[in-house]
Length: 169
Image (cartoon, rainbow, N blue to C red):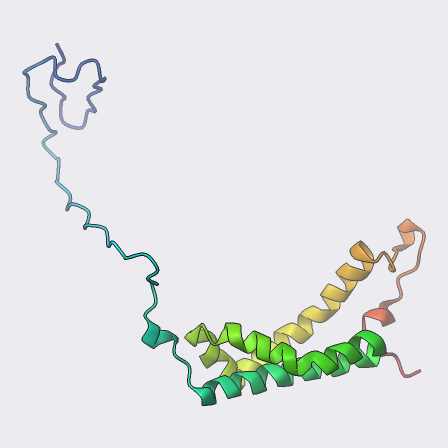
């Protein structure tokens, strides 16, 4: 027979004990009941957590997104073209299609549309991408293409190759 739990004590009950005793379980004196969990929302198949009205983007807003993304893509491609005429040239040629493709995705997220079309936010995005580019170039050169070797790896580090534009000297 299980004994009643004292205040603050946890009573251990095993499944084999369940239903064998008519003794009621005594709750601790400081027990406070909690509110029951709300019933789960059941959505029908194919429904989204975001309503369609929130995802609508006007044609003018989409054009603004394409313009902003296109400007960023063109600026980066022009910088890339100065360093690497082949790949940068292809990026520059493709910048319009790239901006259209990214705009499709960005326009599904109203907060992103607001951030991209806000001139201050676009400048912050460009600054972040521009600041990250040398790191990505260094990681690619050292770990992917293996065109950069450190002195202890038998090579010299040519930091000029990580500049956004070739050295004019």
